Length: 113
Image 1 (cartoon, rainbow, N blue to C red):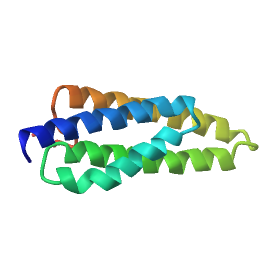
Image 2: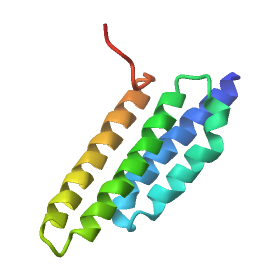
Image 3: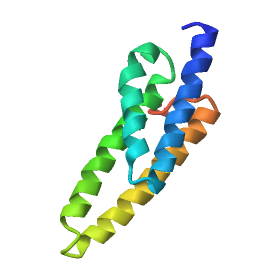
């Protein structure tokens, strides 16, 4: 990956984290846009340290969809509110942790020894 490609991919990864963060204010539409970007561009960064961020963002989306769906389905039973709040906090954590690693130019999913 060339230096200009790397800068472009880094900028796009920042954009996806921003889209994930803004999704709290637009019913998740930008969360969907972000994951589409991840899937479209992930082959471009396949062998770089940014691949771990794309994996992180994609997994954040799918687990979030799972928990939001379960929360929505169980909302009337009372447990849904708890699931929705917990999954929102979890998504905020994922966005913050991922974005901080990105600012430090560090990959995610690194096993410590």
